[in-house]
Image (cartoon, rainbow, N blue to C red; front, side, top):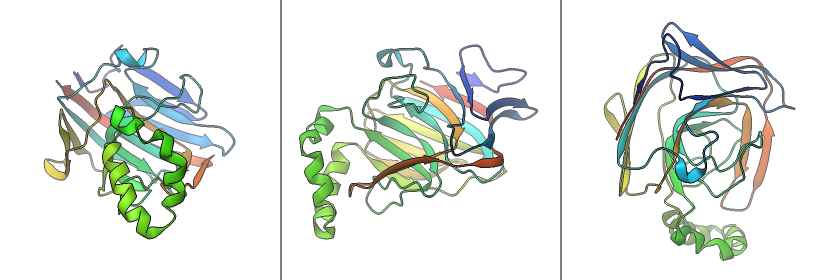
Length: 255
């Protein structure tokens, strides 16, 4: 699959434009934009290829190679990114919640705090994998309250969370923040791991990867989320009085 969004996006894309979110075809690609959002309403601009499908019919599994040519023209208050996930929860209430699975380029701005991988900050631009849907991951579910409490002790956290992280196929690494220069962001989703590249240079390799099937998504929104291994949780919305955007010149997925 190869998409340049010009002169218009292909018909298979599902489009979300809510609360100040807009998808605009520009001379160089598709602008994914949020403008005039308030902290009382969720705002999202999104394209995906799974909305309306049951999760077992999401279109993508390993092995595949995805390249997104993109740039970010403004600071973003909220989250943004592109890649593959199972749409575990939606702030606009279109799907029933499930445990998450994802492999993607992901951004969250403060006060967001999701430090799922040891020694990796809970906000900023990252590459990341997670799969909480496997039997190995679900085996930890009955102990979740104990784990959250025990992780408040630094010595316990250092030992315990590494084991949980492996069980949930969590792997993350910070990457240089995108700017207004188009760059090629490549994800190689393998049956036994993943590799992430920016302009052909490897930025992260891991033996962790989700099983699938997953759907492709690219988005910008105005939400923040706190979910830490030490049991701190929170959610809210940013006011975005101006405009914030990401522009995508090309999406190519090769199975």
